[in-house]
Image 1 (cartoon, helix red, strand yellow):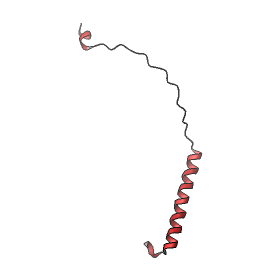
Image 2: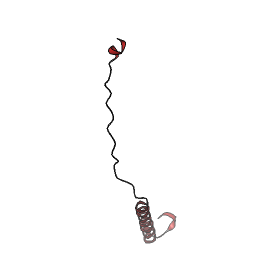
Image 3: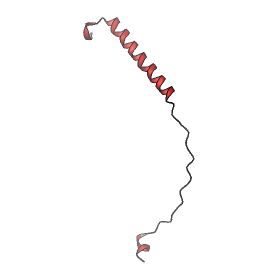
Length: 57
């Protein structure tokens, strides 16, 4: 195994680090909870499109 560590020790450290990473991510996501509400956006006023031929007249 890497760094001449027993397989059982390697698996324990891998599991502990994975668990710590997941718990840390969960804590951060609960603390910085996103605002998922969608604001009401008023409709844009429609401007009639003028073709290039009408602009030349």
